[in-house]
Amino acid sequence: MLVLTRKLGESIAIDDHIKIVVVQIKGKQVRLGIQAPKETKIHREEVYTAIREQNQEAVKAPMVMAQVSKALKG
Image 1 (cartoon, one colour):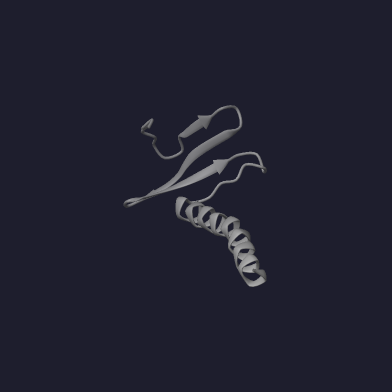
Image 2 (cartoon, rainbow, N blue to C red):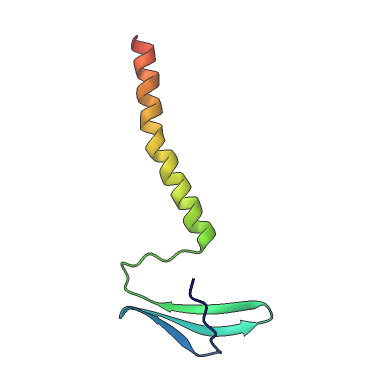
């Protein structure tokens, strides 16, 4: 993990297309602004984790339904 120190108004560049700017510092919270192409998906980690878990459950559902259908036919 790369750890950087930034002050209010300073930024971090990722490749040529993503820029992260320190917009506000208030107590223990830091507010970040992110400039990225529209097709770049950006989520808070807890939201990303929830999306990933839902996707994994959705992939499992057809398999379970196929097993139930097979059991009912058999």
